[in-house]
Amino acid sequence: MRTKTVHSSPVGIEDIAAYIPNHFLPIESLAVQRGIEPDKLTKGLGLKAMALPDVYEDTATMAANAARMLIERNNLKPQDIGRLYLGTESALDGAKPTATYALEMLRRYYREDHGVDCFTRCDVIDMTFACIGGVDALLNTVDWVRAGKDRIGIVIASDFAKYELGSTGEYTQGAGAIAMLVKEKPSLISILPEVGVATRGVHDFFKPIRQVAKEDLVKEVLSLLPAEAEASEVLTNLPDGFDQAGVLDSNDEELGIHVMTPTFDGPYSNWTYQRRVREAYDHFVEQVDQPVDEQPIFTWARAVMHLPYAAHGRRMLMDTFVRELDRQGLWADVASSSRLDPAPRLVDFKTEQAFDAAWDTYLRAVSKTQAYKSFVSEQLKGSADASSLTGNLYAGSIFMALMSTLVRAEESGDQLAGKTLGFIGYGSGSKSKVFAGAVRSPWEKKVKSWKLFETFAARTPVDYVTYEKLHRGQLTAPLAAPKNTFVLDRIGKEENKIGARYYKWIK
Image (cartoon, rainbow, N blue to C red; front, top):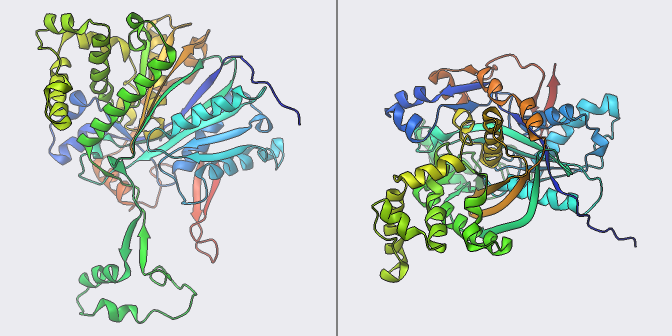
C-alpha cells in the first residue's frame, strides 16, 4: 500500500464569504417593546440589529448561498472540492446531515456546466458542539489538507440563533452563514498547529429532545376545548396495529419534541465560557512554550473570539489578562497603579464557590481600569463591529469576528502581514479551543473583495410586528421576492417522504 508523506507547506484560510439575510430588526424596536432602556442593549451589549431569515431561508439555504459565493469568487471547480464540512447547532434533521441539503443545492446549480456527478466525491458532514462546531470543522479540515497534497476543502458555519420571545436571550438573536476555503499556501490566514483544548460536560445551554406523554398532550388540547372529555378515552380511539395515521398514532407512549429555542442559564454560561477558556489557553501555552515575558495574549496582533453578543469579548478576556500578568509577576504593580487590592487567592477561601464569587467581583473592578480598557481596545479592535449588526451567529460568530477584524484593519491601514492572530472559540456544553493563525500577504486584496459593511448597509429593516410574526412562523409570503438565491421550496407530506426538504435556485 502506498503511503503519503505529510507536507510542511502552510495550510489555512484562502478566502471567506458571508451570507447574511437581507432583513433585520433594529434593536431599538425590540427594546421599546420589551420595556428595556435602549442604551442597555446598544451601549451595554453593543447591539444594533439582528439579522432575520425570510420564510424561505434556513440553515441549509444560508450554507449553500455562502458556499456558492465562495466558489464563484475563487473560480473553483466542484470536482476539485474534496470536502464540505458544516458546523451548526441548527440542524434540520436528526440523522440526515444538513450539509447534504447544501451539497445537493450546489450539485443541481452546477450540474449543467460540470456534470450531474460534479460533487459525488465530496465528503460532507455536520459537526455539532453548540457554537464551537465551526471551529471543529475548520481545524479538522486543516488537518485533512495537511495530510494530503493539493487538497481543497470548504468549511461552513451556518446557524439561526433563535430564543423564546421575551427571554433574556431574545435580543442577541441573529442568523447567517460563513464559508471558508481551506487549502495549502493560503492567501489570508495560515493556521498554526498548536491547539489548546478544554472540555467539560455541563448544562449551561442545550436543546434537549423533550419527551411528552401522549396523554398529557391530549389533556392540553382538551383544556382548550369547551366540551369535557378524558384524555385516556380519546387515546382509546387510536387505531390498533403498527401503521401510523398521524402524530399521536406513534407506536411510542411518549413523543419527542425538538424545538429550536434553547434551555439556558446565562450567568452560568458566562462562568463556563470563562473557565473553559482559562483551561484551553493554559493548554495552548504549554504547547507553544514561549518565554514567560512573551505570553501569547500579549504578543498576538489581535484576539478573535466567539461573540454571543458584540460586547461579550471584552467581558471574557479579564480572567486571562489578570492571570497572565500575574504569571509574569507584573500584576501586583498593575493592581497598585490601578488602585486595586491584590487578586483573590483560592487558598484564602473555604470553598471554591466563595472564591469564584470573590473573583467575579474582582474582575468587574478590573474591567473598569484604564490598563484593561487599553488592552481590550487594541486586542479586540474592530472585531465586534459586524456582530453588532448581525446578532449571534452561533458557530459562525467567531468567523464573523475574524472578518470584521480584518476589514477594519484594512480600512485603518494596519500592517498585519506576518503577524499572529489568536483565536478563542467556545461552545456550550462545554468546550473551548485556543489556537493561532499567521496573517499572509497580501491579505488586504482578499479583504477588500468582501464588501462586508456595504452588504449590511444594503439590507432592509422590518418593524416589530413583522418580526414577531416571523418568529412565530405566522408568515407564509416572503418579506421580499427571492432573487439569485437558494430557497426552501417545500417540505414533503407524502408517505415515506414526510418531513423531507426540497430546495431550488431562484434567478
